Image (cartoon, rainbow, N blue to C red; front, top):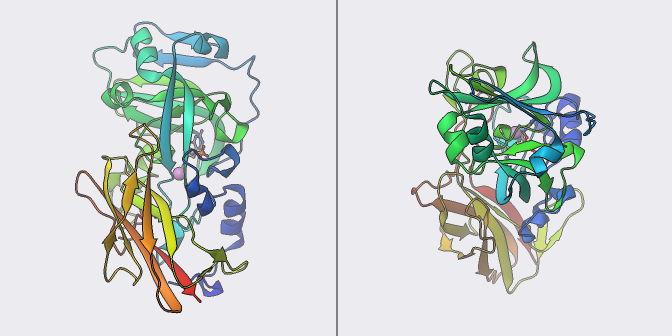
Amino acid sequence: MPLTSERGISAEELRLAARNHAMPLEALRWPITPIGLHYLLVHYDVPLVDPAAWRLQVGGAVERPLTLTLDELRERPAVELTATMECAGNGRALLEPRPLSQPWLTEAVGTATWGGAALTALLAEATPASAAVDVVFAGLDRGVEGGVEQRYARSLPLAEARGSGAVLAYEMNGAPLPPQHGFPLRLVVPGWYGMTNVKWLAELTVTTERFAGYQQTTAYRVRASEHEEGRAVTRMRPRSLLAPPGLPDFYTRERVVAVGHVTLEGRAWSGRAPIALVEVSDDGGASWAEATLTRDLEDLSAWVRFEFDWEPTRPGTFMLCCRATDETGESQPLEAEWNVGGYENNAVQRVPVLVR
Ligand SMILES: Nc1nc2c(c(=O)[nH]1)N[C@H]1C(S)=C(S)[C@@H](COP(=O)(O)O)O[C@H]1N2
Ligand SMILES: [Mo]
């Protein structure tokens, strides 16, 4: 589907797109995404937080409730996690019909090194009751969504909160967390889609019943129609993206390269298992050839780099595609399966290139 004005992007979508920027795809050349190039998604408003007055409350079904200042969190053993994060709505604007929400194309992704305290250690300190099932993470931001006034909150099953290597991060790429990425504290859960990583975190509540908040049971469900319950969006599906080759046209951003040799590069990730294979096609997915993978970041929750020597021997238009497969054997589909919220669209990227 070409990105033409017939797609009828609304002023509301344009405003969301201007607030919540994507990662420019040339940033795929950096292993760690520089802070201002990391994608951004804020459902409501970025809250102004006074770090001196801020507290993290840990409560609910725990033996030892905690109230912690930022300094008290910093006194705990520090951990670092390099993780690729992708919005579950990435690819939404390429679906037909287009679900009306943040209109992402393919670039709602980034990789950062998060520094903070291990979630599992903090939970051990508070000691969840034996009947505990979920941990609810609530942010300071409030808004109205689907007609419901709420603060942004998401939960994780207790076992996942303990076992996933999650971090309560107060640093991003070695700097204090910037306001837009959750200052003073955010959750980062490696492998899960973006919505899990609650920003402006203020409350952590252990519950003995499954959390049924809006962002858990109404939003972030894959459903074919409004009326079905659907299934929860959880871990990131495999995906790969090409760093745009050659030169861009300013308006269409279509790529122009010279006949001869082009080194294609890009990044691939999956929240389910390590990437096993990336393939590249120059004929829109009719034929595929294997790319070379390099793991230039140690952390298994970070994307891998791929490279492919492309020899376009004649001038003309080519449709470049890339396709990742993870170690579970799951591959990116050629066509996405439509769903109401426009989640998990990991269909192969299509990059038209003019060779001259
Ligand atoms: N409190 C709060 N946390 C939030 C959000 C939000 O709107 N409020 N957006 C979520 C979504 S949908 C995504 S994709 C990620 C985006 O994180 P980033 O803006 O740091 O890239 O944050 C998640 N955490
Ligand atoms: Mo998201």
